[in-house]
Image (tube, rainbow, N blue to C red; front, top):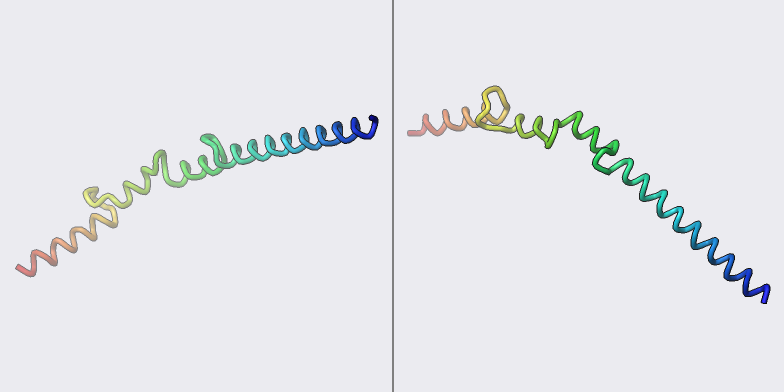
Length: 82
């Protein structure tokens, strides 16, 4: 009977340890990729909230952006073909 008890206890301990590892891993993933995680913070710092810096950069209607100048050049070339 003691052998069976040791087997059950051992498996229970292994199961608990496995669950702890799962919880630690989930916590680490949340720390990196969660809403307030390191990755989210870096993206917000470099690209602005909701990627505003990137959308502004590629906005063809906003004066001074590369896409605005590209659009202007295309329109000028098309106008010159008429």
